[in-house]
Length: 116
Length: 358
Image 1 (cartoon, rainbow over the protein chains, first blue to last red):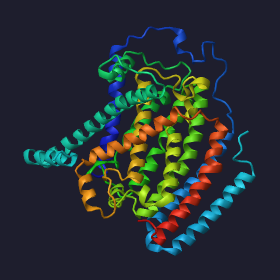
Image 2 (image 1 turned 180 degrees about the vertical axis):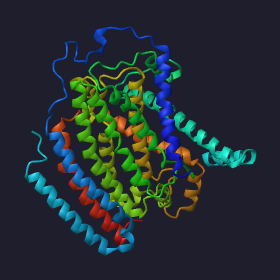
Image 3 (image 1 turned 90 degrees about the vertical axis):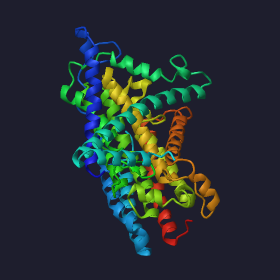
Image 4 (image 1 turned 30 degrees about the vertical axis):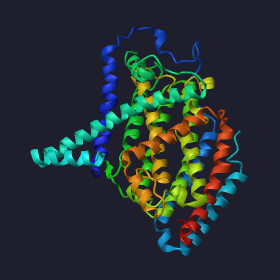
């Protein structure tokens, strides 16, 4: 169907979600209660906001991921031509993965892959 | 003979004979949209029912058996219940992002359907970079999850979203590498070409041990990517209530729940396409008679059979392995799966260049 199918699927998803939520709105009669709007913390009143500094470990993994993911994108075009190119492609990817692996070992040595 | 391809061709011809081309095209767009929505609803209801039945079988109990024969309408009843529930927005929440997140998750789940081949010549869009498209769009779903967790203004939600983010991005690497190792064999990114290249045998059999290793890595990685047990840290109910969708209720929760099951279906469909030949029947080399007999089974049955088999495998994992801790989870990916899949990619390249595959 070509690229226009993406627009069709996009609007199908929106129609599905909007339809579901608005059908629910017709049936539901909400009762107002100040306690309903509180954040759920197993019954006790919530203390403090979660919107402040967070454990840096998650961000470290995201940063390393970013590097590896860019490398992964470079591999797609290589993977398509590898059979035609033959041995040259193998040598090139060996060099590529060797450099990548050195970077990986460096990150490992620096303790970036260690959880607190 | 009954086939999805025949039905679409008949509809296409009928529309073009009776209406102007523009109107026929518009009608086809609407039909595709309605079909996609119907597939969504059916898959959501069916897979939730299957999950509960599989869980019941694993634990030697009956599972849902009251609503309809074998409890098959149980999930429909659950959906009706969810429609009757009030969709709350917490007072402290970022209201715009909170309401936007379920839409994003749904749109991403719907967009991934585009290049998947459901049967022979039955594909919404045969895009020539299909595999790249799949990995690009499926990685967008993490945005919806992070958005939901952050906007809820709830500590459980934020913790769940952060865990989910770290987990999804980490496991995407090894999933991507095992996908690439199949692309090395086929030399094409198009889903249709990948399926056609398995005419004389599926890659899991043709590709020797490297293909099997990459299948194992792929199935582990997608289990983690869809937040399934044993990698369900993002919504570990014993520690985080419900993770990133703690604050969601009513239909918005239902959308998250539905998108989760659709994602399981989609990753299993990708696995079935890459390693088990998608709609391609079981063919063995030059056994013409055997191949001919296998061709009598419709291609859609092959595709859905393989996909549901893989979904069963993933559901089986849930009742077999205990949940991992976050540091164990990240160790598994970064210290074991990633180096193994890099090494496996080199093995696969050698097999492909030397022509050692069948």
